[in-house]
Length: 196
Image (cartoon, rainbow, N blue to C red; front, side):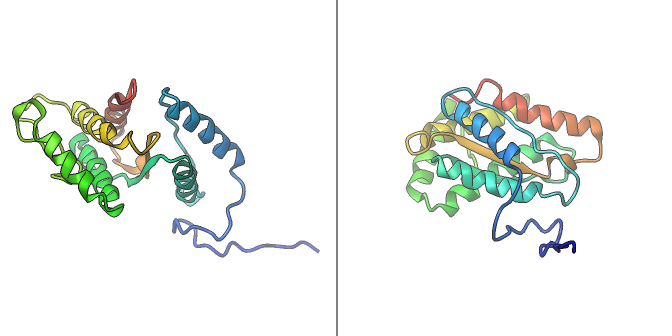
């Protein structure tokens, strides 16, 4: 007699099951990359799969794994947009919300004070205003994100080993393939070489 098990979870719901099974290979790859990131060699990883194949649940597991290593983790749901600026602002707001959620009010005030002094112009970042608002119209979203993440890291590194961004639904950010590639490159170029 064959024991047919029925999946009690609605595919695509992103609900976390009471136990996590499988994906050992993906978790081990992530752990290896996480260790390298913690030791100063930032690594990136993509989780690619069909709709409802468990990517979101895997990201939740990777979040737990990262937090157990004392990393600051932010799970971000990619917006549906053709704009690199909107994409960067979504990352900024998600990080801000994660920080606020963890009730780091003194951190927020300290960061706001430091950001307002950068190059002598008004800067807001990561929900303490949403994004870097540079007066120079020629500033790229990559620069915006790089400066914001660097500023955040300068504060977080006192308490955390790394910043881990888990971006869900990046494959659905836009239907326009050229714009999707540009948005992905914005992210990768911002993270290239790590945050110092």
